[in-house]
Length: 480
Ligand code: AMP
Image 1: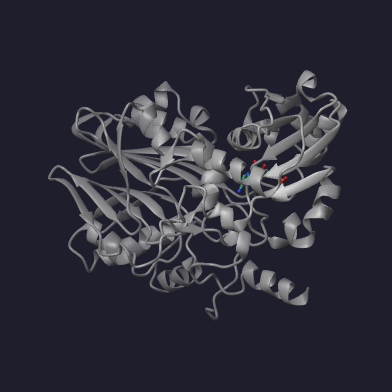
Image 2: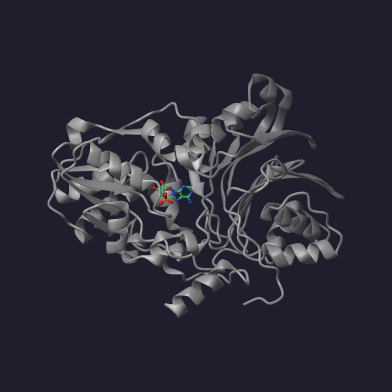
């Protein structure tokens, strides 16, 4: 455990990345805009695009959804270029949104760089301390700026920006997928554990595209080529594509299993496995682990739906659409005050009485974190006349903080750290409750290809920051 590093509140970074290199100078901002639109589920707090024309960078970044931040005028103002990168960002409440918008723009003595990051470093506090002592002035509170300055430092000792990025990987620890625009190159990086996704594809005109998820390649008509290997640095320039694999295989692959369960879009394929099929598999495992006599299986829209289909197929109990979801709810609704939460849920979701009334219902949701959102949903099902409600959750119980970019932090707020499953069933008001087992979570894509399941197990593949929430978690386990 590291000593002497200040304990910081963990800031979750669920983000979406997009980058494009075009052989011809042309309008790239609209393509990035469509890419980010398809990645909006990965972050709704801010959006940004940087276009690079021969080393001249134009940026537009602001708080809000992609559609709020970018209109025709903003996209036009970015002008044509050869390289563009984009970012959508989610951060936990309290983080300064405007100062932390990405892509970051960095001026350094060898030129400029725009960097977009998804994930969280585990050693950012100590790196930041060291960089500050050497004179770096930080403008944001993000790990991403630590990565950027680390690369800039390495650039002093290396002869290319991609070599600097690869050297920086010796120093930075934790979760990072990156897309970086330098004046003449587009660089993509995936950390050696491969915690977060990053894939590449191409357009018919030879443009090379990087994206957090394949669904954004589909959105702009790009052909998916492959996922970056954990530890890989891929560089695109007018000389073609080069790959630096010096960090590949240095760590066991530990892809975040919660990407399959919740974050990613079901139409994405990550590391060779369909997100939709992984969710259906989770449902099938749940049917095997927690069978129950029932009349209908329904899912909580949207991320519970595929698992519900999987449960229904495996159990033979008919699947039905149990809720109508209002498609026109904006972010403002989700963020309204505590008193309004109940009506928020009712406006977002409404049970279909004809499907529910008098039925023994299996209700599938992707996860229970604090245990607050599912309560009004369950109450609505009771009011719609459900005879019994058996909740099945397509993730194991959250018991520990995540340090790699998932917004699951303080164990104090996690319902499963304080209560046994039967108690949680009583608290949320269901007749029975069953979670996916950790063993099955590791098998969602077939064989165990190496997942990070630390938020479900408390076992971390890396060191985690000293004085962190994990210490409190361990102390709590020790006390109980
Ligand atoms: P709750 O149990 O009230 O904290 O909410 C659980 C619900 O929040 C789940 O059904 C998910 O749809 C959603 N959820 C789970 N994890 C996250 C996360 N890291 N960020 C945002 N939403 C999440």
